[in-house]
Image (cartoon, rainbow over all chains, first blue to last red; front, side):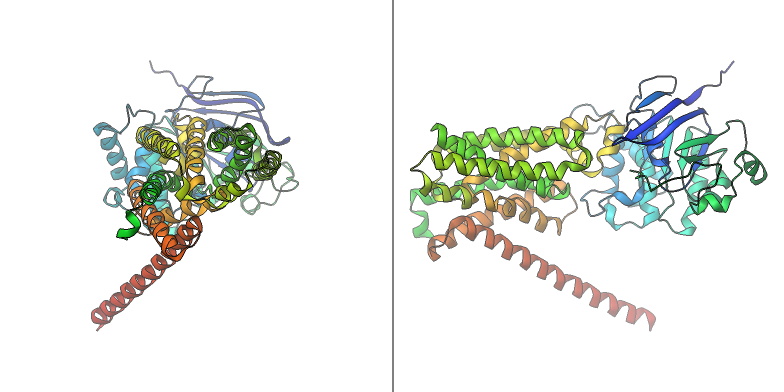
Length: 257
Length: 283
């Protein structure tokens, strides 16, 4: 009999950066193959939470377990960072970007034929294979985003983390992109951070609200009606970043990076 | 050119120029793509403290420079992961402190001030044979390290955080890169001097980047361009009786503007072709 496993479990997590708390007492339990959307105002700590799960930021206090292990093991996580912060003049091709997802598996100096095959497979999956020799700067916003997803998939992760993946992409791209994520969700857990609640709510299985701390109820499947009950904050209010009395007031803007 | 080449010191200086170009083409490519020009510049100036110490102790100042830049590489690497946002301020303080220390130390070991200028602005014609061998050895070390960690360097330069999530020890790779910059800076000081290091480290890769989107080709073009600028600058300075380091740098700057102009012409021609195609297509 197959036991239902937990992909990510977070208990009483606190994160402080330069003495200021960014995350306060976050608790979260994500089942395997879940598709969790985390919404909330800018500066609410969404990116920080993803980085903690990716092992990039050490918690100040609290516990985090990924795939049942208390050590975050590289290879479990496929991280798709926020699109805007790259140098797109960097001399690197699409293929080279995706291959970097294989760095952990690389033995010796160069990537193996198997690494190339996996990178090519992932590029085909996101429909970017024919672009593989292009320099990353020659692509459109949506195309770059798909390359970053292919790079994360090349890790062959159990959990895919996406940070505002549709922030600077055109509208036509967004629907296709979420279709791709739903398809990927059959094989892996997905955690997606966004402030675009309307796009997110249509595709995710569960939803959480984040503003310093996390408002989350794991058993709820999202509908607009349910969401208004569980998170008694009207959708538009969150989307525009206006604090509601249920959420903690956000004094000043906390840097998300 | 021929009568210039008949001098032993001239041939040696040319060799020095090419050897330096290898180090600065390869390492400069990383400096440019990872945008750590400020850090590299600070390391060049921090070396001045070591030069002062070398004079003071009566040893080859290059060894002093080497010790100081290696230490600063370690210090900058440490600051990068521990100090948060204050990184550039702390590096700026190290920069100023080390230069001041160098000046005081040189002052305290009187009698060497004539040679002082050669470390600030370089004098490739007086590079001793011992330093040439030192440069050659460092070139080999740099090439070997880059050969072995090529993929890691590229991944860390492009997206350090992602590299970390797949298990690359990015702190180690970054520190290794800083040490390579330290070595390069030391070998360049003799040729172009502390103040001009940045020019030869960044101009050839910046030109190369306009013509290729591959790091290895960028390195190759940078080494070739660096050799042209150093050897050409040396030759020009010999006939025009100018300071060699400054002439090399100005030649490199001229090269940079020429390549910009050529690129502008090429782009305009492409636009004309495109317009013409549009014209035919539309009617």
